[in-house]
Amino acid sequence: MSGLLSNRNNFVSCDTTDDRSRRRRSGNMSAMPLMHGSAEQVAALQEIQELFRPSHEQLQICMHEFEQEIKAGLGDESVSRTAQPRSSDLKMIPSYVTGYPTGNEKGTYLALEISGVDIYVCQVKLKGEGGKLAINQYQYEIPDDLTTGNDFGVLVDYVADCVADFQQRVSGHPQEVYSMAMCLGFAVRQTGLDRGTIVALEHGFEFPNVIGSDVVELFTAGFQSKGLNVRIVAIANDAVCTLLAHAYQHPATRIGIVHNIGTNCAYYDKVSNMRKFLAQQHNGTLQSPAGQDMIINTEWCTFDLRHLPVSRYDQKVDMESNNPGRHIFEKMTTGMYLGEIVRQILVDLLDHRILTFTATDGDGEEEEEEESCLLRIPYHFDTSYMYVCEADDPSGDLEDTRVVLEEMCKVGETSLADREIVKKVCEFVGQRAASLVGASIAGVVKYMVESGIGLDSNGEGSAIAISGDVYKDYPSFHPRVCETLKALIPEHVSSKISVGIVKFSRIVGAAIVAMMAEKMDQKDVEML
Image (cartoon, rainbow, N blue to C red):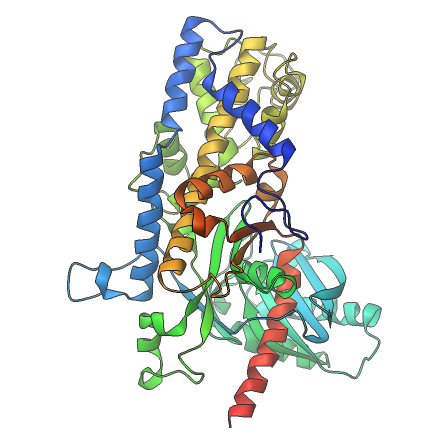
């Protein structure tokens, strides 16, 4: 397998010619003083840059601490200063998915995803032959009156109707019973491959009576009441699905990452390393051999970057969030928060008259504009604006940045220096986010290599699969992550790692989980 500089199959190269030229331009722009700014503006921007430029040593600390959190989350007593294992920022949730897809498996499987108010039902036909597959997918919208109430069964019935409609559209064998895996937007405490209790409902759902119920039992009962020929065989996590969606076509995949408005990471580990998990099993044993490898869901959004300097802007975003003091890694790296960090910086620069345009909120009596400025309204500088500003050609008049500010954010007329400052602020915040993601991935890789996981003994190496609109659509994010990885991981390791951007991962990956569940059942039967 070729390494981080490769472009293999559907892998996105970590260092294409366009990426190198963009990185040179971006890096030079970040290092250069403003071409059109005053001395005061240059000094202010340099201060911002220092706040958002972690050093190589700090990134190494981040990598090391992430590795330690993995060990602590698994129950490794070697990272504890006492006789008892210490707590971890990472949840390290077992997926109960063991073994690896080969790309030669065949069959037809269903996947169900509930994401926000959208329902996705997907049929995936696995054709083998090194990972060939065909996909049929439909999207349904959940009506507002089905998102709250005292009877969760009403929502289950609607989902069952959607699955029934989907099967009528695509199924060529209506009497055949299909295996399905579910990927849900609810917080579920998984206790088995096809068992899990609902801990909390998110994204606008409110059914208090359903908390503590087994989600598979609820949906199985609903599907049976509708006469659906569907068997729910697994619950799937988004990062697990990303890993397996890629692994079916690239069997050396060992890490799956989702980076969008939220973030998560899953990876393969030896069951024998999962001390907490083993201790919680009945009589301390597993039904399947402890010598197997299992995918673990880290829930790394909860990683606390207490070993890195947090800027005053990060502190403000955190304190004004709905969960202050928690999910710090998520708040410093994901699409939910990056645009808001930029907005906080721009408002501060406006208040200190570093930026020269006007940004009134329309509350004054003299204000008669139909549309007031949006820049002073929290979360109204969308993270996607950063993509536009960063990609704006610095040799011109930064017209795209002007459109973002004057037309999208409704600020007053901007100068070229204003637009240049905004472009650079986006670069600083985006660069730091990618660096922290890269350092955390490096922590996972470091742990896996030292534990004998992830690098094949035959020297072919491993793959990392990443999905999510922020990672996919932010042009400079991928090369920056890879740049950080290469800076932190020894060359003999990085040369054996490929990083691939995955599309349609979650829903396709859930179908792969259903296939893996069947595969695991067959192995259990063979052992009897």
